[in-house]
Image 1 (cartoon, rainbow, N blue to C red):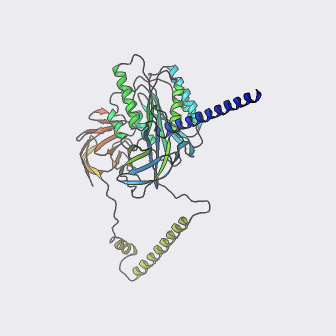
Image 2: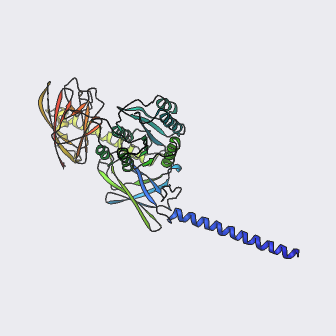
Image 3: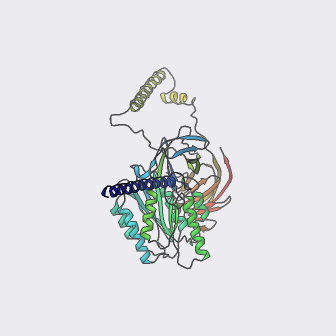
Length: 498
């Protein structure tokens, strides 16, 4: 009887163990199905940042429930990249949290009275928690918008300084310049300071309202997002009931977020603090890929970067436009013991110095038996050589100046990227003698065939056709611009010239 009972107990134990193994394998299979292709994924290219010898690409994998798919390896991510018409080599792919990089955060804060004092304090508390969690390599800045747009705090890693900048904020304005605020945050995010992390993110809480007369329009912000975009993570809120006008403002905010490579979240029952935490987890849950550029020249040209991912026979793709500018001050990384490249370049420099000294001695000896001075001989010799400069595309721009203290003058320039106008010669392409013009008053920029003018926070402002502008404003052919007491008639053709 006891033996029969023992055997029955053994059989039951065996079946239980088998059942547990079956359940375990089922869970493993279910996990791999969700992660490895059993569910529809979305590839989202967040940001790309040019380096001296390549590009850093930040991207997300999102499942059907809008949850990030994390911790996949480079072997699991069959990733390919093309830059323009040419394929590019993917050197490395890893989750962002496995790198030693930081993030440059930009807190974009609405100072209008859209938020109640209680809600505003909750937002400040959420930003304070975020600041407390910054790592050693993180940086953060604060931009405020309301009736004016200001950089309340430049990028810094000092948590005490950031907290003080946040503490003094309070809702006070009746008007809102959201569009100019987003533009200012984008410009700040495009900075290339030496110690600034390459990963950038803008975070804002807003109802999307833009009601400032003469402010930037929606299309101007969208034009800025065509290339070199900075991800905007936006929390949208409204006071019930949700009217058609309120929905229109929120739709615009959502469009800014999606076009920038960021995300839009509609505030509901979730607290402000939890919403900010969710955005931070989202930013840190991305992947980063390092892409080598062999055929592309860093000459300011715009390339279309496309990211392709194959997953169990399914193809995902996303892309963005990126301007490859020369990286100033880029240096080769060397090991503590030095490298062969360093000695090679040192040898080249020494050889150039010796050759230069020989040439000077030669010309001096030539000058002794000549009727010409040494300088004349050297200048004559140099004139026979022409340095070929790269020709960049641009727009032919004509500026005619008039005004109470200006003689009518016409200037013709080729607008490749931007020109600056001001009172001082240093740092300005166009210098005007008008004491009511600021030292650096405004700049005119080109975005493909479009031309914009941007007020550089001048003392007396910039007017287009008699209307004051705030931030960047699109120019039309024949527009009349007034700065100080000087009027500028701007004429151009959208045709790109070489």
